[in-house]
Amino acid sequence: MKPVDIFRIHEESVRYYGDYVRSFIEVQNEEIAASIAAELDQGKLWPPALIQFNPAYAEGDKAGVLQAEGVLHPELANNIFSQFALHKYQTEALRLADAGKGFIVTVVSPNNDLTRKRRCDEV
Image (cartoon, rainbow, N blue to C red):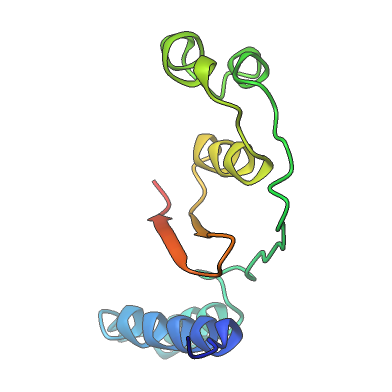
């Protein structure tokens, strides 16, 4: 398997997304246009990436804790997730989703095969 440079992929993704966003912006007022450009150049729409290495898949919070926090609906906590042990990366993703923030979860199997990748954009 060929190595993947995730930092390069992130940099390219941000650049391409920035170009895409900028392609829809047409402001006649130069002062406003400069202000918008400055905000975009500072990364207003793309916060720094959070990268965590968790090869042991640390244990996360129980579904009941997430329900008590209001992150999980009781139906999910009691009937769906109650049968599963949640990992830390899963509970962190659920909290991000609950906060209305975007995230990407990538899971690699023990033999380093990319098994799942999910993206959730901001709502």
